[in-house]
Image (cartoon, rainbow, N blue to C red):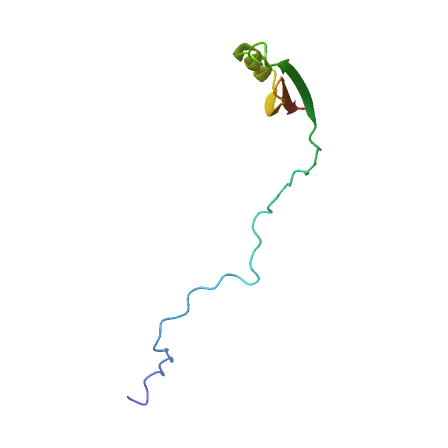
Length: 94
């Protein structure tokens, strides 16, 4: 190396660091989140009981059950004492 040669800048043996984000980070567009209110409503139900004498024929016909089902009634229980059948129906309150 000659004494008149310009000095070389020190270069590290590894590649330069990747570019860093500006500091502090720039904020992006604001995020708006709207949470709908949670309102609890106590469910209401309607109940209906039908009693039929089962010694004189079928207690409920298919047509009767279809009609009750179309009106929203759901059969939830039956009880029989050997002579009379009791049918308990329920539907959501209106």
